[in-house]
Length: 220
Image 1: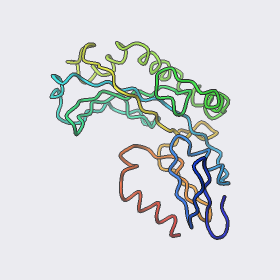
Image 2: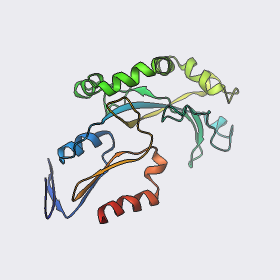
Image 3: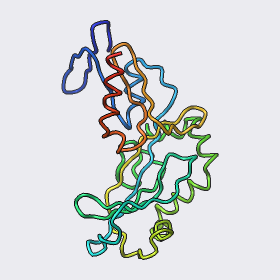
Image 4: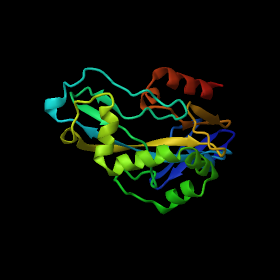
């Protein structure tokens, strides 16, 4: 609840009062913005990003990030190889439609989330324009050899035994009613709150210049 003096946020654990509020709610960004009175036309559509990790003996296979050439029509980077700061080497992610915004386990379904996605005309337009891509991503999620084929296009040394399980992530993708997948930051504001409705990558969300920009929205 927002008034001329500030914002009150209430939840099961109590309530908080502040002069201003920044909401970076990720998978719930559209819902939080609507609760705050923002006229949000878009909807967050969750996409599961499934990863694998390579065995320790293969962690020196590459020494830098290796990406496929991206499709400029889609905001997803494709399956790529990523050395991590703890010495692992990961492969992924793909981009599979999720039917639960917080469903990190494969096959998770939340009826409210599924209804929000499947009943949204913006998603219908995305699906119609990307049938082949969607089916390929689903196939590669179900069949590990399909996933491996994507990786071997630029790292042919990989084998099926190299793909060990690793936790999935979920991308909060903003989709406009006309079916546009938002590629860039999308920020809306009220008099005393700022709502980050889309953030294009984890790297961008941890960038200090982006934080400065959001704080600047508050100052304005």
